Amino acid sequence: MTDKILRVDALKKHFKTKHGTVRAVDGVDFDIDSGETLGLVGESGSGKTTVGYTIIGLHVPTAGIVLFKGESIALPVAKRSKSIKRELQIVFQNPGSSLNPRRRIEEIIELPLRVHGRNDHRNNKQRVVELLRKVELSSDYASKAPTTLSGGEQARVTIARALATDPKFIILDEPTAALDVSIQAKIITMLIELQQELSLSYLFVSHDLSLMRNVADRVAIMYLGKICEVARTAEFFQNPLHPYSQMLLSSIPVVSDEDEKLRPKKIRVVGEIPSPVDLPSGCSFHPRCPKKMSICPQVDPTMVAVEAEHVVRCHLFED
Image (cartoon, rainbow, N blue to C red; front, side, top):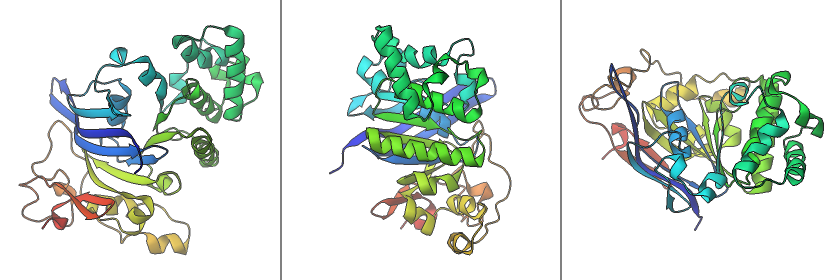
């Protein structure tokens, strides 16, 4: 039996605003095995980044369970144990904004080491050089400022910083979203190699479903604060079940006849994703769904197991 490094159960994160309560995450369940990559995919506003921020401790859950290696971490990051802080790291979406422009790269990467009690500057300096090499940067980058680096180089530095404390689990919040396609491919290849070398587990948050085909072991599709489908990656791309999943897959650009055969028939979806302040009744996807039934606006569906590792939250698959 494979060890579960992370378990999320009925996770909710709501925000109070002057316009009402934003139910950014509204009852999410998933787990991640040691050494696995789970791709969490959805449109902007789906709540996927909020899930990542809640797991890392930047947000405190409104309700629900978050277990890391069996230990509850559903609490502010300041109250977490040092071992949890060390083993659980994040790579933010925009590397340029997450790197202090007034610090040299050496100082940025060394900071997590100092926070966790490693104050021997000479050894830390050697560790920084080692980390730079792991992300395919030379030791010369240690003396540079973040503002002098390209987007791809900044992304590599943020990954090196996340690796500084020898983590076991890393949340990747769209780490390649702002990069050119050729640079994206290099960063993704590097992340996969680092995962194998260091026995890492990833939660890979992205709006780019096509990226998941080569990165994720399993894919979880998120819509308006809830997960609507989870499956092994190969199974998902061959047999997407939820109409929203089919919509996402049918809209992916393809360049070969083979990819075109795998793509679902184009699905016409009406409108944009609704506001999380004013969610539709019943199934939140029903105002846009071409397959909606009379029950859909009335009852929110529950997750149904269609195959051993393929679950979907849709009335079409309920008994």
